[in-house]
Length: 463
Image (cartoon, rainbow, N blue to C red; front, side):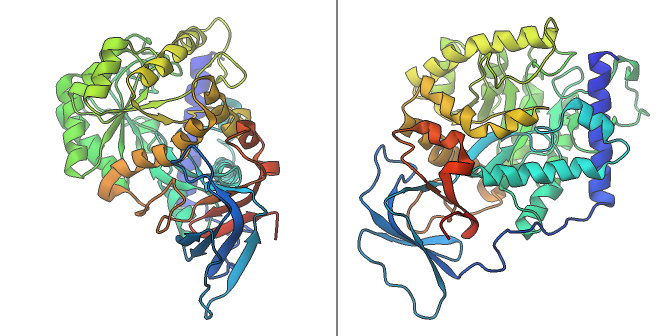
């Protein structure tokens, strides 16, 4: 079977699985989420704090969490209200830091290979089980928040928020909006041409992608994602590596179409993020008012200056030709495009530093279960360009600033990515100092002794 056909079958299986999710599969309560036995307050004693902002750790301190927020931080003993139960965690001078944030994920498509997705046609509930397990594993690796930038994760998000599934906070985009022949057009050539009476493709029906040509269709598809609960909108503005019918160098969408999506998002007080690698596709998106460029590995000096002048985010991933590269067959056009992108990564990070761009970090793993387990390792490799404190700041307070760009569409009001009084209590207790040894985050099972999200302890190896 040709690779393209296998990919489309995989997408079809994904969609069948999602149909099972929304119509047949009920969410089972995940065991061990700690919510039944959670104390009203948690006191971290004798911890050194990486607050998500500073280059240095604090002096030994005490941190009191009441409910889902950090109530107090002090180097002196903290008074505890007498009328509430308190769980005490002795830090023994270990490092307390904010939960980590992945700003570019695909929770439904990370951990399932194409073969898994094809097999799921006969057992669609297995597909959701994989997504649920992926979400749980992500949280248990210390990643307490995720911005999902293409995929139908609305039901998974709601299940996590209800407490039925253990997983991170999710900022969903819903379907990636794409022009015909764009990065989010998963159809086979046999499905063309589309006519006014053509049925929507499976990918469109179930929210993987949304094909929209012309201003009215772009407006409609954007508004549909917002209606479903998108916290931000994702468009494909240029060619890609994973897709087969859009060469890497092409730009996608006219100025008017891009602007239509931006206006629709702005009417909902949120923003548009675009998939784009090349200078032309990035510059068109910026002129249209897009606020976040996803990828950008092929940008040049002129484009970097334009990003800086317009205060646009660069959501960049450390794509290299290494063990963490998404798998593509040797000799394929996808593999050739992947090498072109990887070759541009150094330049992109160097330009981001030169122009002091607002730079976010994410993984963008696809169809690679092993890659999903290496989320911390993918973050740690940023020391190729940044100091450890800069790396951890990017994955905490900086990424949190990007999440907050959703404004009123932010599903989790409150301050994230920092350890400060009044902030939401997403916290990690690390067995060691990641500012001195960033590779500690590569082994979360051994080195993240306590994992807390929203004031709830999900892992405690000290208790």
